[in-house]
Length: 418
Image (cartoon, rainbow, N blue to C red; front, top):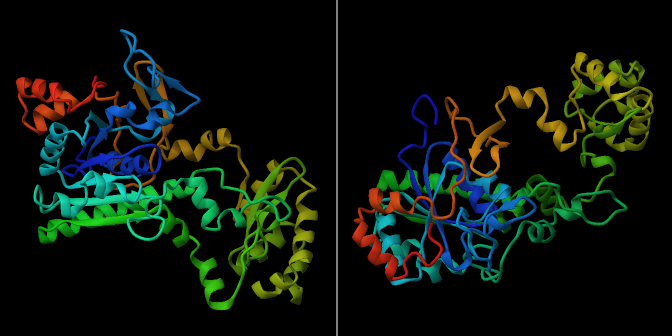
């Protein structure tokens, strides 16, 4: 927790979520103080993210649990489910549905990341839940949305990076189409869904009437083509891969070799070009009329890049970066992931946090990026499967122990409840 009230305290989200994109979005809400209650399906052993290798522990699907087994878990699951609560519930079972609707009656939003045709099949759209809570916001994050010819198809980050054209833009010009190293469509889709959910809740609190939010990974990926799409749709431009990850129009703005590694140098403003040539000890390049503005440098791209590269490769990265920074040139080392996490600035911004875990001990992971007021200074590890059934059913739903036993006997929680 934090020393003061977190900005989303008082927001309750019932999350029928799994794997990556959905949980990443609700992680932002949970970190900011929302009560995110994960609904995990007992028929499949809970969120599939619990079984994602390589770092897993506990019971795997189809195996017998041991006496000390806390259930399935993984570092993948821990990284995107902290500060949430877990309830094992079979929402297809009539008794499970009863519990689900009681949760909805006391919530602000139902959040899901399922195929586009599944929310209606599960009965979790606004039309199907408004009788329980007219203010409920039903936010669906799916691969392709709740309408259109692909609505019933599963959608995953790799598929969307290919389908939306991202892979055609990534990698070397003479190499194969390539995905980004991080799951950017999943992560961007999750954040977009969280934004849509908050907008829906704000509207519901103003009007007393909830709504559906139809967010898709496909829409997210296409929308992020942004200026490249505008160039193509308006002027017929066809984006393509560039050497050394070069910007499609600004020169120089790309990776360059030094004597021992790689750096990024960026000149998105004219003043940065003038600073760069001064730092390189070649001020006459700034006076060359061929290189005098964005258009000229783009027209003479190969000459500009050849000159800059020849200069930079003469010294090491450790020599160049202080000199470039001293002259005010935007630049950066091309880090490995371990190097990025060890950056002094990462520590200064509090981007690495720790939680205690009964199996792994100290689990170190990265924080979410949204900052609103003072950040929370304590975090709860991601929950064990069904860890919060008792507390949620008692405190939030009002079920007595005897009523919970009856629900259990009726199959509301399947057979994997902790």
